[in-house]
Image (cartoon, rainbow, N blue to C red):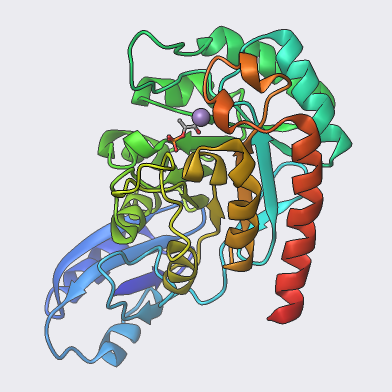
Length: 337
Ligand code: PEP
Ligand code: MN
C-alpha cells in the first residue's frame, strides 16, 4: 500500500500519522524523494483503505499488490517523466536514443563520435570510463581523467553523457560530469550502490542482470526510488540463456511485460543483447516494435581497433542508417497503436 502524503506535512503530523497507521498495518516505511513524501506500508488483512484515506496528512492511498510498489503502474498510471537539461524528456511517451563507444579511449575517438551524434541529432552519448571486464587483463577504462576530457568536449557540443558507475565512491566523483548514471548488468543487485544512487538528483539507468529476472530488475529500481530518486530508466540488455550462437539473448518479452508493470521508461541495448554487429539493427527494430521507449547502442569510428566490444560496435554509416530506421519504426508503432 502506498500513501502519498500532503506536500507540506509537518514532521509531527507525519509522526502521529505513522502512529495512527499502527492498527491498520504490519509495517510502514517512510520514503522522501525529490518529488514527494510517501509511506510504503504492508497492510493487515481486510483493511478498509477508506479509513486510511481519511487520516490527516494523507493525500491519496493506493493498494498495490506487487511486491515492488513505488515503481508499479498500479498506483501511478501516468508514465513518469525524466526532464533532461536540454528540454528533452525520457518517458514511456517519448523515444530516446543514446549511442557511443563501449569505452572512452582517446580525444580523437570522442571528437569523431560527437560529430556523428550531432550530425544525427542524437543527444545522449554513452561510453565507459570504468569498465567491468570479465578478465582483469582487458582494458579497464580511462577513469576520471577520461571522463573529464569527454565532459569538456560533450559540453561544448551540447551532448549529454551516460556512463557506468561501478561503486559507491564513484557516485560523487562523477556527479559534476555526467547526466545519467548507468548501473551495469553486473551491478544490478549491488544494493549499496543502488542506495547511494537513491540519494542523488540525477537520472539512473538500471540494466537487467545477466541472469536477472524481470521482477528482480523492478526490485532494483524500487531500491533507488525508495532511497529518494524517482528518475529511473530500465534497460533490457539481454540475458544469459543456453544459446551459444549469440553473446546474450535480448529478451523481447521483457519489453511489453515491463511496460505493463511499471510507469518507468524501458529502453533496450541490442548491442550487448546480441553481441554481433550485423544483427544489432534487426534486434533494435524488433525491440522498438515491441514497445521500447528508446535504444542505447555501441558504435566506434574504427570498430576493428576498439579496445572493448568492437565486434558489436557499429560503423558510423551503419549507425546513420539504423537511426533513420529506428525513428521510422517508432513512428510506425505509434501509427499502429
Ligand atoms: C556496457 O554498457 O558497456 C556494459 C558493460 O554493459 P552491461 O552492463 O550490460 O554488460
Ligand atoms: Mn560494451
